[in-house]
Image (cartoon, rainbow, N blue to C red; front, side, top):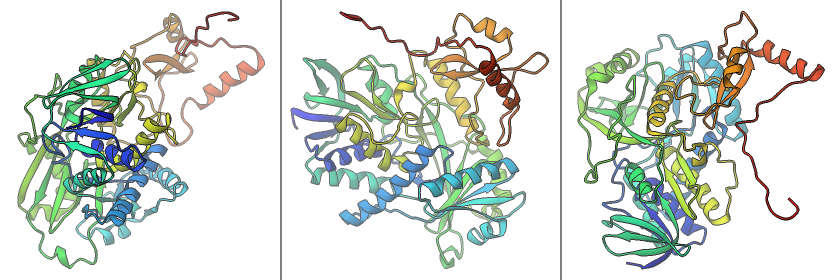
Length: 496
C-alpha cells in the first residue's frame, strides 16, 4: 500500500468511485481510495439505481442529464457493461398545480437540451399498459430516464480509475485523520497514508469520519423500502421495456426489473435509523422490512396498477440511506480545515454521482467548479445546523418531496436559529420571514388586517400587491433595511 498520495478518497460507494475516476481522468493519477469493506458496502449495493431527470431545480436537472450522458459515454469508451437501461419515465399530474409544475420543468428541460414533454393520459397509458388513469390529468414524459446496475457501475468506475493510475484499497479501515505540517495523515489499520487532500465519501459513515477532524456533519440515515414482484406473465412480449412510473400522490415509483416489477413505496413520515451514529460493524446489511407502515402507498399502488394485486412478492429490500436537511448531496471544502472535502448525502446517488463528481473533481483540481454548485455546497449550513435542526429539517424536506414544489416556498420548520435584535419589532409590523443561512429575514410585510402568512402558488401570490406597495414606498420616500444576516468583512492594517 502507498504511504504517500496526492488525494485520499475515503469510501468505496458510487460517489467515492466516481470521484476517483474523474480525478484520474483529469490527470490526477496519484490518488487512492480506501474502503473498510467491499466496494458498494453501505447504501450503494442495495439501491434501486434509478437515474431520473425531472427536478424543479435547474442545476439538479443539469447534473441529472450530465450523469446519464456520462454513463452512456463511459460504457461506450471503456467497453464496460454497466447495466444502464434508458427506458424513459412517466410522472403523473393529478391536479392543476402538478400540471403547472410540470410545464415549468419541461421549459427548463428544453433549455438544457433534455427530451421532456407533457403528454395526455391516454398517451401515458400507451407507455404503461398496466396503469389505470383514475384522476390523471396529464403526465410528464422524459425519454432519457432510466436505471443502472449499482454494482456494475461502481466496480467499473473503480476498474477504470485503476487503469488510469489510481489505486483502490479494500478492507482498509480509516482510524484517524490528522493534519500535520500542511499535509494530512490518514491512519488506517494497514498503515498510514500521507496526502495533500482528504475527501470524505464515506456515506453511512461520513458523520463518524468527519468527527475524526472535529466536524459535526449535518446528515442523518433513514430507511428506504422497495419490493420486487414475482414475474409478470407476458411482460417480455411488450414492444419496449416499461418506463418508470412516478406518482407522488401515492407516493410511489414503479419500473420493470427483468420480468418482474420493482415497486418503491415511501413512508408518510421518514423513519430515521441510527440517528446517533452508524454502528461500526454494520456492513452490507439490510434492515427488517416493514410493509405495514407503507400500506397506504401500497393500496394506492394497487388502484393505480391493479395487476400488482395478482402478483406475489419475491423480495423486499429495506436499507438505510443518508439524507441531508434539504435532500441535496453535501459536497465541498469544510470551513476551517485546509484541503478537507465532503462528498456525501446522495439521496439520489445514481442520478447525480456521474455528473456531480465530475464537477467536484474540477473544483478540487482547479479551485472552483465550472457551474454554480451553491445548492450542494456544504457551506449552506452553519454552526446552527445541530442534530435537532438536522432531524427536523430532514423530516420536512422528505415530506415535501411528495408535494407540489412551489416557487420560492418557505418551510415553517427548524426556524429561529438566528434572529436580529430587530426581529421582535419586525414581527409586530407584520413581517413574513424567510430562512437564510439560519437567519430569520423579512420577505415582506403584511399590512394591518392581513394574515402574515404566504400562500404559495404558481400564479400571482398573496404577497404580490404588498411587495409592490413596499417597492413604491422605497421609491417615493425611504426605507430601513436590516442587514444583520449578511456577512461582514473587517479590514485591518495600514491604509485600512
